[in-house]
Image (cartoon, rainbow, N blue to C red):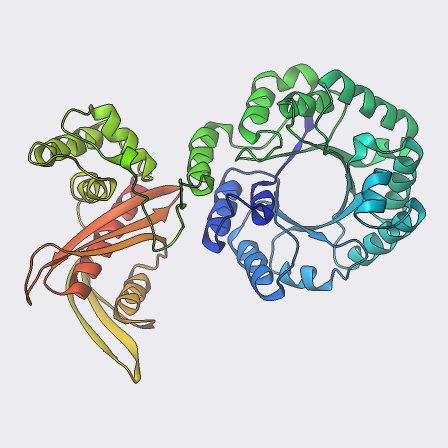
Length: 471
């Protein structure tokens, strides 16, 4: 039984596209989710903006614990900056992308085959100085001349490449045609018998999944797929086939298929843009549209569906509580918006015993000093205190709480609104935290905005801690 390496291309594909471009935090969170899913390799885009892209690679390298991080190095380029950004990764790979077809060589790279082959040799040799894991990706390989492909494969193997990937960028082959292409490569390039080789297939004809499975049946050791549909094989579909039929053609993976559906669903929420704007991971939070307005005539399933769009995964008990709270409000007004439902979920769903209770807080801030917060929380063990600086009083208070709890979660959304009028108006705050691929919301109400924010943050943290300890 062969263990197949599964390489996910979601972050790389969505880093350079015109649509569905992920924010920095979204890329980081998607990588963390893929790591928990136990994909073997997570692909990132090459360094174009030295400051921003290097920071992303460093952040992902620190956050990812199990998967190998793969980053391309420009053909003929210096791999040193990429290797430096990957230095803190538990395991990393350098990729060299080379054109296979004469059209791509001449019209994209403006070079002939011998020059491309020499650049492949030089670049792979340079990459080997930093890691033993070097991959050659041959773009447009299915439309390349066989002799040119053989020369590229032999050169890469001699230079020290450990993986060769054949890319079907056209995506016009049927599974039988792709299998025939691979059989020809195996006959022509004997070196492939002693090294790992893989495939990457375009989904132009909706055949990528089938072509990838055909490649596995012919001995492929690595496949490229994506958790989000980006014109390549579907990670979920391919892993489902391997889990169900892999024994019949002698392959298996270490991907956690049991949690695949849930994880892919969360990733897709990050990647799918809204009409006119898109959900941005950070302080912009929930997206409200006319389709997300609910009335008293809507069913519990419809209400739960909108809650799922907002990122919540409600149990049957919580779904019933949310629906009952929703009906009390919906019966008194024409419609309920997505943001209002967000607040309802924060109040009604998953109310848990408080592990941390706010005792008091002191905040110092001003135009000429850095904001500082001193927070005291009451626990079963007694009173715990934290002191922290921050970019503003609320940020400082949140950091102080993180210091006390020893936990740090991604802030998915932060909303403040006045619920009464006048100088002593009460403020309602909604905080949404992302943890373990799920969204947890907390609500705080106070005439003091900072107090409302701290209470909302603690409310959400208590929910996360309760579920983590229960698991």
